Structures are given as C-alpha cells and as structure tokens.
Image (cartoon, rainbow, N blue to C red; front, side, top):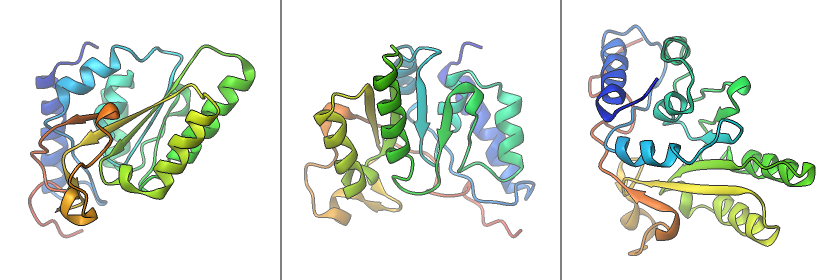
Length: 195
C-alpha cells in the first residue's frame, strides 16, 4: 500500500474513535504531524532492514508494510504501545529507551554476520536526553554498527516542553532529528475513557 499523509491520519482518527468509544481497553499513543517526514524516511528503509520504535509506533508499523488490519487488530487487543511483528523485522517498546539496547544488539549481529541490512531506531526527543540513548549512540559509533537513530522531536517530554524539563535550550541532536507538532495528547485521544 502506498501511504499518504491523509491515509495515515485517517488510520489514527479511526483508532481515536475506537478508543473514545471505549472499545480499546488499554492506553494508546497516537501519531500526527510527522507523516511527511516519516514517509520520506521510510523510502530509505529496505525490506531487509530492521525497524525498532517507541510506544508511538502506529505509523512506523504501517509504513513498514504491515497490513493495516493487522496493526489495528493488535491495537484493539491493547497493544498500541508495544507493537511487535518479528516476521516484518519490526519491534517496539512501551519503555522509554527500552528498545535501544535491543536495536544495538541487532546491529551487532548484522555486522558480525556481514549482512548488508541496517537497523533504524526511532525515538522521541525526551528519550534522546537519557543515558540509555547516549550510551547506545556512542557504542554504535565506536564499533561502526549499521544503525541509524532517528529522533522524532515534538519538543515534549510527555506533557512538558523538553527544553524546560531538561534545562537544555538546544534540545535533541539536530543531525538525527526532525521536528513536528503532535495534534493528539500524550496518551489517549482527548476524551477521558473509563475501562
């Protein structure tokens, strides 16, 4: 399927409607405002590459080529923030930075095997400020691992501006970052839902 910004947005609106109707009995994290940037990035990701994402990974899964019905089924089962499709070389984690050491390990195994694929590790700008990210990035650089870190920068650490939360005026590493405005709240779809 050839994804456009409009199709991705329609997918998220459908998930928001399902959540607001209390048909998803678990947290969700919706994407938005980053469609065009992700579409461009995924043009460089080969079918043999590995994609590891954060808890906000609906778009990543769709752009990876995982069938939308399958992604939606997992979300409906309460796995919005931990989508994993090993047969598509796709993993995510609900733990901030939890996927980064896994991405590093996959990159090491690729290098040792001499395979041509890469690892693409997506993370938010808050996670880019953590020790886990800095250690993984430096280790990957030091060992010349086939991994690309992509920082999705909505300038928020959960609900607080990242620069304010971390006292850092510069924010995330600009060489690995694209900026966007998230139209959804940090969690949920804007309506309080009782499970």
